[in-house]
Length: 96
Image (cartoon, rainbow, N blue to C red):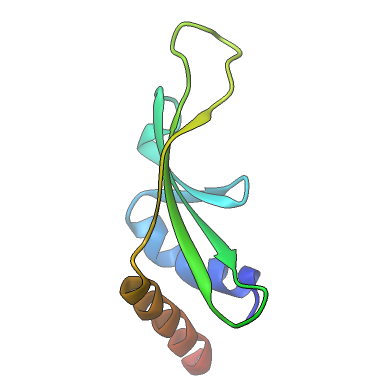
């Protein structure tokens, strides 16, 4: 199962929570234009059919108009939750 398939399957659930898929990550819509912006990204393991789920809070200077977002806090979703999400996405592909 490729990254695009995982994104497609997660998209519905995350859109219901207020996320939009943009710039290869899920972004919380309500924080898009704020200095602190919450995102979720997926990274496929090159050696197996597993994924790492990263959460990030990005910061953008509210004082500079053209400032770029930078990672303020980054973390990984615990392995157990990642396995649950992968099984949920895989079962949707099998059913759908």
